[in-house]
Image (tube, rainbow, N blue to C red; front, side):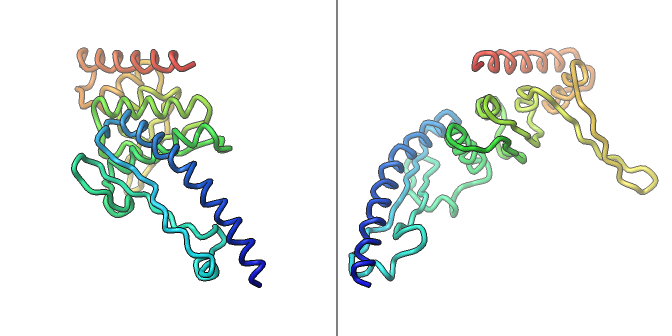
Length: 219
């Protein structure tokens, strides 16, 4: 038994060393992504538990080794690091998940990704930056996104509008692919513009052109 536990401890120690080395690179990549997404003062650390003594390996061992790992996070300057799951807000969580997806998209074997309102809590220029990150992922993956943000809709290659209406006390769901003028009208509406308003439509066209130019730049 002692021989087996010694071998297990050596293997688990090697795994732990590798994890800690990879974690340093992972931390830096997350920081860069979060900075791109407007969180330049945020801090992110992968925190590891202490390596147990060899004689205590049996009490600390799991199927994943003996490491207990926590993601520690601080969104603003001057704030102490705390467990990410306990303090992150909705908008911050959206951007953090998008940062992770951008990093993992380069190495994963996932062909399709679904983002269900990942733009929660963001708007304006930050909405455009999130749309750019999603376009980066879409360069090598199929991306399906549920969104009400005009910047993300303008960045999409295909837009499908889902609408609900009530007729004779029945709820009817309709689906329509938007193109050209219909798409610009919808981008305008999501931006808060008036229907068929020339200024709102011009803004929608400018946003669509900006997004199209970005997609061309990454191909």
